[in-house]
Every structure is written in structure tokens, then in C-alpha cells.
Image 1: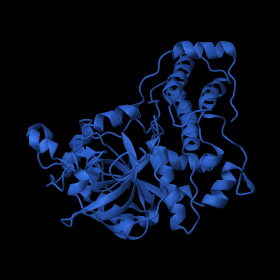
Image 2: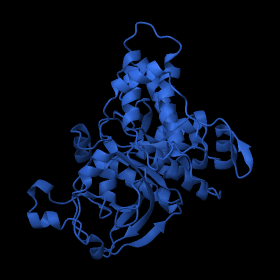
Image 3: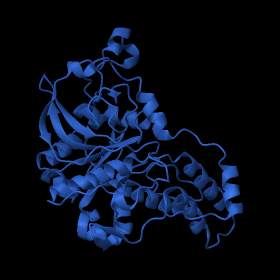
Length: 397
């Protein structure tokens, strides 16, 4: 794998600025939810598939905040299947690498007044796909020699240090973008401009057009916040929306209606939201909204939270808005909804594909209640034809 070599002095400055590396935000999030589990939970659930749409294998994003790219590219792979194409594992880090370059440019334009870091949004996946194209993972892994998992901690600190220096200048040279990009490419590798796939040469743009075949303009993002007029667009004010993209606004229950309609008609859905709640258990593979507040539960109730189906709180639009306003709902994770299942009591859950490897009870998948989905979602992305016709008409899609 090719590596761009930094000039010795420049490299020394960067190393001095980033002598230590923090635990990644992704590792921190996973550590927070580790305690959310019950013993032998799987023995107390019986899930039966209602809809299970085809998707590609579960991946592991490693120690990187790239859930948005992993789940977004997983979504595109399922779109290929839906369109009758042979799915290709797309290079998640190609998308992330390009987004980091664009994010750095925005950071400088905004004089440092946007969030850096490894996070992103589903529109970043589509925006980068439209601008740069895409490549198969076989052509670009983003891994250094001897590395088997993503770990962006050092790279993030170094790139942030470069940008912090850039915005202190009164006037910018024409070289800062090249200098910033060189840091990213030193860790992730230079993005391929041409590659061979199954015996044929492609550029990222021709590969996107000829092999993947997805059209970025066919996809929409939808959220729900009562502070904005329904059936209009608004700028979702979350830190990872560094590009200030807008989303469509619908009523909270229409999020469920939209996801259900999509799955029923063969479309999967990309889901962004908050998974730091006590009702989210990665180990047990279940997410729900407890009827009783966690702080008010007995020790026994806490221990039994995921041992079988439980009663849920009925979430209101006021609850959703309050959780967003109080930072209880943040944009900390992205996953891929691929189907619907019923538990032994007949209650429906969404089948959700994660990007944390195979380390939980359901080998990388989860069962999320509809109440949790609509309560903790910051947004969803799906094909515009998957939106229910009545809602699409209101949104003028």
C-alpha cells in the first residue's frame, strides 16, 4: 500500500502536537453500554422473522467513529441487491476519508466553528458518493501494514492540530489543503484514482455509475421535531451535521409508518440515533424503552431488564423533543434496519444490523422496538420511493 511521506520537520511538529492519543469516541460509547445486559437474555426471547431483507455480512468498524459510513455503505449494498445487482463490499474508509477532507475545508471556512472528529451523517455517505464515486473495499481498506482494525485516534489528533494551526493565520496559502490531506493519507493511504475489479479497470466515478448504479439524488433524510413546521425541511442541529444539510420533518409516528412502508416494499432503511440509553443492550441484542425509569427500578428489575419482553413507556412527541433538547438524544450512532420480527408475545421489533462485529448474542444484529426507534432516532435515510405516498405528497417529494 502506498504512503505519502511527510517532510521530516512537518512530521516532527505533528508528532509533538499529538504525542498522546485519546480513547476513540466509539470505544467510549461501547464501554458505556457494556453494563446494559442481563444474564441468559437470549433464553427468554423467541424472535420470528416477519420481514428479513437480504443484506451483506456484518462488519466491524474497529476503534473508529465511522458507524455512519459502515451503516450507510451497508445500506447502499442492500440497495444493489434490491435493484437485482450483485452486491459489492464498498470501501467504508474511502467514504470516510473523503468526508474528512471536506470536513476540514468546512472547518477552515467556518474559522473552526464546526465540530471535527470522526463522526458523520448518512447524507455524508451520499454526498461523497456523488462527488467522489466509490470503490470496492478490495481496492482501499484504509489500514496500515500489519493493521487489522481501524484505529483513528492518533490521526484525528494530528489532523485537528494541523487545522488549528491553519485558522490562526491571517491569510491562507494554497498549500494548507495539501498539508491537511497528507496527514489523512499518511494514515489511511492515498485514495485510488484507478483500480481493477473483476478484470476491468475503473475510476471511483465509473465504478459508482457502472457497477453500483445507485443515484444519490434518489435518497432522502427524514427526522421529527415538533419545534419545526411539519412537512418542511430544517437543518438538523447536531454536531455531526458539519455540512448543514437539511432533513424533512414529519410527525413522530410517521417515522414508524415510513420505516414500515419501506420494509414492506423491499427497501431497507439507514437509522441514526442515540444508543446510550439503559434500554439499549448490545450484548443482549435488544433495545426498548422501559416503562419504569431506570433510576426508580429495584436492583432485581435492573438485573432482569433484558430477560424477556417487557412493558414499554408510550413515547409522546413532547418526550422526543425534550430528550433532544436535554442532550438525552444525541447523534452517537448509525445502524441499518433490514427487517421486522415478532417476539413470543406477538410484539414487533425492527431487525437492525450493527457494525460492531459479531460479539453479541445475535452475531451483530439487534432487535429494536418501534417505540425505541422513533424515540431515539435523530433521522432516517431511505429511497424516496419507499416513503408512503400520502407522506411523500405532503413533503412534495
